[in-house]
Length: 264
Image (cartoon, rainbow, N blue to C red; front, side):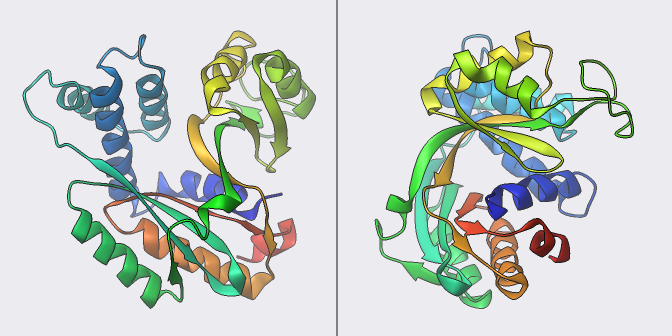
């Protein structure tokens, strides 16, 4: 199992209730603005915007903030900022490869932020193309194992507090183009081609299965096994990078056992 996927889902849950919530909100709002600017302000006709809004709602971003972001991005209020996507590449401890995705209105500031964070947290920058070949663009949907309600209820069916099984998720998404379903512990990761993301997400909805997020992501083709010390160093670097305002996502190809992740 990819340690990064597991860490990302755990961290996402914690971020909703800790001091970094403001930073998380800002990144989610930026996602909405860019999606609305790129594909228009109507979520029904813009699947990327629909998914960005759903992810923001799942993270408790207030509806007013979401509505304003849609209007800004869609040019409905004359405001908004034109963001550019930039990818940086680098390495963490133990040869773990990293892709750093920035969404910025100032390339120089973004470059300086990323370089400073990498240096201070023990990472090294890499030349363009030296890391990216180890990752593939994929559609990733995160499905919580427990569908609402109390996690203590263990029966496998739909409804409040019911547990969803891997077989149920697999059955729902198989014909929609899903390539694999990975068990992350408290959730499942459904991987597909980016072009099948909407079909996979829709298939889950039609099966009555709730999901936490659906978005295009970078999935590693080769993973690097890390021990507790290595995992701590990688996670420290990811946190430092994600603290940068211009950094939208960090992808890393580290692999860690459940025991290692529990200690991290």
